[in-house]
Image (cartoon, rainbow, N blue to C red; front, side, top):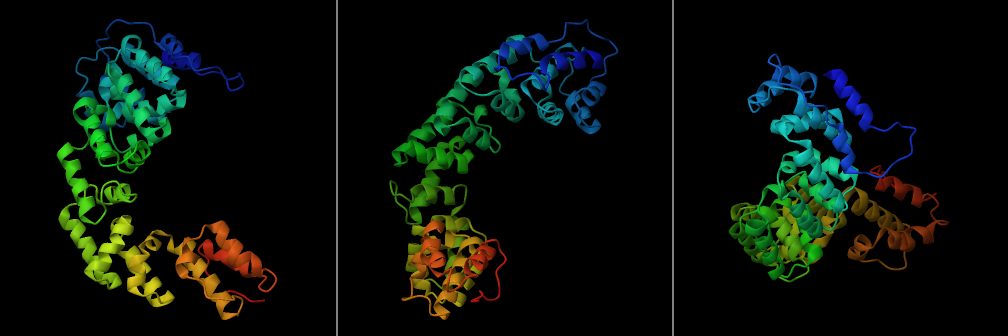
Length: 384
């Protein structure tokens, strides 16, 4: 049997020196081993370990789902088919452990037609291999190709879809009863196709949630001061998705105490940068210490410019603060810039305004700034 599988794989996998050829799914059909009679001595557990790469405990668990498997004929065909798609031995083992019944699928009648359909949708061989490793059980369903066609349009690309499928098995949910009504509702909330795609990538389970649950999420987004149709609505929905009202309240209270904000100020801050609700307490505390204690900004100012809390403290905020502080202390700036401007500018504009003009007066400034951006913050920027 092992020699037979080796022969099959040799036929499937082209020689490294051979020129690449277009992916033709129908060629995988030739990989199926010839049918053999049931083998009364065939041991499923041993086969799962030796041929599929499962551990013994995995094989014991998987074999319980294969009571009718009496011959290696179909499993050999499936293993060869998966290998022909490009799945590694580790991927195949993971697939079999997750879905043992896939070994009993017919390559010719079930698996190959799905692969052909996916190829017709424009998916590459590597895309199909990734999809198989994520949801090979769906290859046994007749609606798989039509569902993938819908999701490809929704997500905008196979890369976006496959990335999201690592966290949510979209193909197991009904399009008509669950997904499409949710998408329609999100559109009614003012989200466009691009916004919905981004939301699906960030919060994959949102479009497979119960519609009433999704409506509750939208209500929570509105309750933190972000109305439907506003530019921040997608971010607000992203922030509060799957949070309870109690959890949101607790996070708002922590923001108030950490930044010494009033109710009105925390409302302004959250409505302008709702994703701050997803930050850890440690992250918020460090930003509070930086902006209030180190930079000297007023809490009310921080609330108005709460978008600043979303920037990286190590790679953006601190390096820019130290660079501008150095320039001010050495009299190299004609006027004090607004820290809001300093922190918000793109990297290119910041360098053009604060680094490049001072190369002669402060030859080490750029070097020190670059080091600070990498986390190597010097005690003092060097003047000479």
